[in-house]
Image (cartoon, rainbow, N blue to C red; front, top):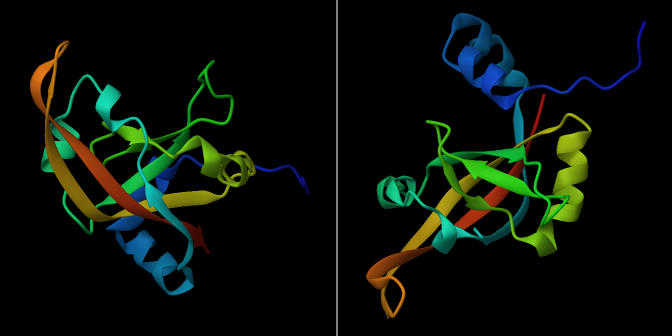
Length: 139
């Protein structure tokens, strides 16, 4: 019997979530609240559509990203797999370790604040502050 950790793709679990097999796991699933924070990097997204369509109560997947600027980077993806931002660097040390150990983490959108801003470079645009709760999904 192997005692090695196996990395589980969160999208694999999403595929079985609404199937009879997924129903077998629901009684065993626990969502454990770990932290709450604000999504980082929303102003740097080229496509703001995921943020425009986001609503409180939406779930986001947390996935490690190969990022030279931050070796522990965790990207947040919506249900369509679109980038919504990042877990702030000050919070990602423990979460990156959990993800690297094969744990499933997800984030729940709790609040969205849209702000209009005028800048020389971009002109008039809207930026979003998105607040989330981070959960460990335990089976």
